[in-house]
Length: 180
Image (cartoon, helix red, strand yellow):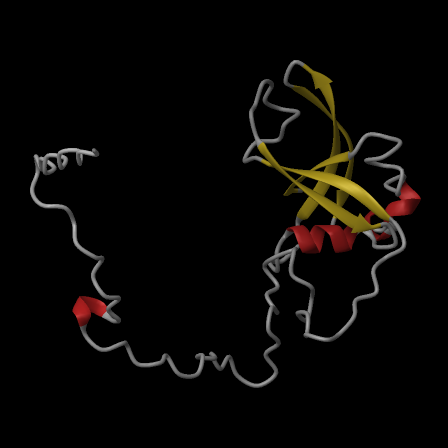
């Protein structure tokens, strides 16, 4: 003869009854209707002749902007530059901490082009770039200075030794843009 086992005791709920099924999915804020569609995107009208991305104060933006679907022909060789951003010339203040920005510039450009692009659309007359080299222990030495608009600054970067080997086989070119 088989005897049925006693029924298990009912569960004890310490924090209330067991949770019920999850609530139904509700659309909209505060269970209201969904928001209306946003419609068409807004385009700013900058006037006739404006090209998207045409911003002369940024050296990273292509002059004239970059139009979709248009291919870019890049230079064949580039020089690796590090441009020091400091209010003080590094060769005058030892141990100075500063920021720098890294660029790759086509070596068939002249030094005047480099100065104009680093001036970010501001007038370049009265400015110069100086090549500097690190001596160690926070000390820098100024080497050659190229003043904008001179015969010396009209030379191509490759002709003054700022060529595709810099930043690869040789050290990067460190420059400082300053008033001449």
